[in-house]
Amino acid sequence: MKAHTFLKSILLFLCLLSFIGCKKDEPKDEMQIISMSISEETGITYDLFDTNKEYPIECMLVMEEDAPRVWQPMTFGTIKGFTYEKGHSYELKVKRTRLANPPMDASAYTYELVQILEDRIITEPDEPTDTDKEIHSEADIEYQELCPYEKYAINPEEIRIDKAGNLFDANGSALLPYEDKRIYLENILDKADANWNLFNKIPYMAYYAYVFSPLTDEIRLVRVSGGGPMLKNVIPADEYQELLDRVWGEEVMKYSLIIVNIYKQGLQKVEFTVRLK
Image 1 (cartoon, rainbow, N blue to C red):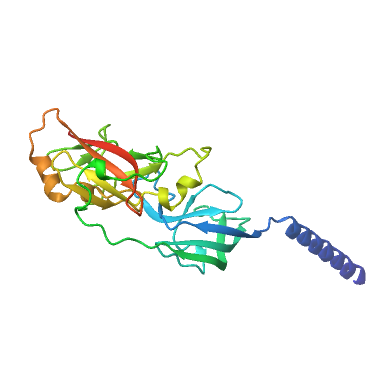
Image 2 (tube, rainbow, N blue to C red):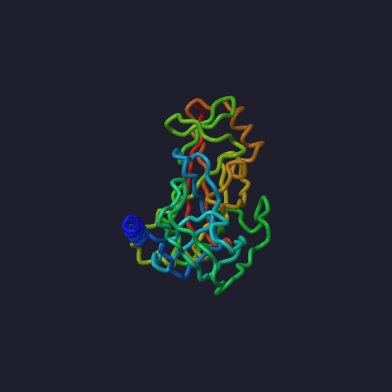
């Protein structure tokens, strides 16, 4: 009986050693304290399941210390203990944890605020008006130093409208409705460009755009923050209705946007066309 009890104790001890060994072999979360920059400009990201990128989500733009010169989108609320305010740029110290077993539908990293090193408020000018009284023509726009510069591409470059007011791209694929459609400004600046860092600072960031319409001499000033201007701001409802009422034939309407920074200094001219579907 004693021998049997002794054997059971040996087996229990071996099982315990095996369990401990397995525990040691299990992957562990990796934690690191890093510095992180957060831009006063917001960006655009997409839900994991939005494979066609139809529903853009406004987000923060962050730069981690071990990925310098690379601004990455990050959804609001990702950094535990930190609340982002638009118009502020931040320097943070955060705890970044690489999860050993991340959820299948989530990031492999989690973030938690350690310290706000700097919180800088970028002073915004007054809300733009429909017409900027000082701008009567394209020649009146003063350009920022080193501009115009090919930093942005416009998407879509062509919009087609049917008589019911539905929107399509050049290939005939349906777009979001007029009220919800945004014209995106995509940053195409090569990261290898010698001016990459400079052109991602405030004086070279798109904030407004002057709109030159083929249907009016009025020059409109619209916001482009959030990824680009809303179509309903670029083409107001009355002008949009005028487009629908026209007998176009093969006529193409060209809209020009002169992108300007927060100080209303010119950065670049981009264009898109509108035609009847």
